[in-house]
Image (tube, rainbow, N blue to C red; front, top):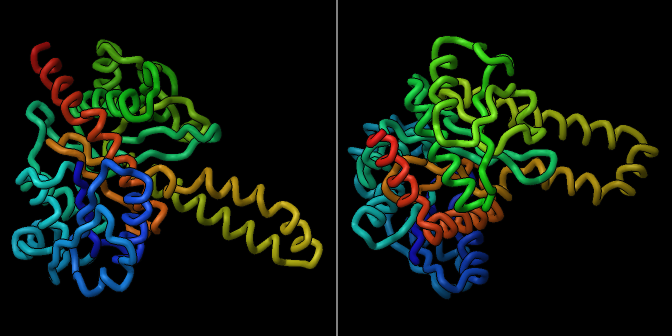
Length: 330
């Protein structure tokens, strides 16, 4: 299979993307990787070229660019060319850590939407205390959702967790302000009723405070709420580690204690790190498109490649298409 990477998107491009690609090429013999971007810049970091090629372009989409204008005007941007490779059948999946809005726009324009899916969703894996993680969707692809969109997201999320993460009968929870039936606004109430009737393992309403405890495998909500949850988790984790580091270096005694517990703190940090979970899938498109975190390092890029490889191998997009067809027939 062939996976194409927008090597110029994100905070650490192209160094992180090249390092992640080389690590993936060593680990997965069945994967060919295409790095799209400035060949001169990429070559500075590309020490091993086995199963890796470069598609040169000097144009890229900047974080501050207006998504729709950038996609239409910058036709040779690394992100646009990456998605065009997928559209024209020269690649099976695409990864980018660049402008999220532009990736969504370009994905819809060049890859296309699965028939029956009204709006694609952005779905990252987030950490849980048991290390298994949970899938949250939508986290901002659509801030104004309808009950039908939430139901479609539940089907797509359940299919992904079952096929890629190998979770038997994934538990689907609706993020709400309380666990009781009948809680929430009209959107939540209507979505709850639809999820109850669906052939999914629906466990009812779940509260945001319980998500990291692993209360469900798939958490669904509107994009506005999902984005708030995502940013709150990221912000809290960052603040917690900053406070912990400050406290552990505040005195000689604390520094000695920190030295003894160094490996334990590293394990905690690894469990809470997004980099080991890959990226956020843009579910609802006709091919796997992965949005890696803007600050992705080489580890995050490697796991995004692993994630894309699994999605291609397990034919997740085909499964989602079949689920969409079933919904339309019912």
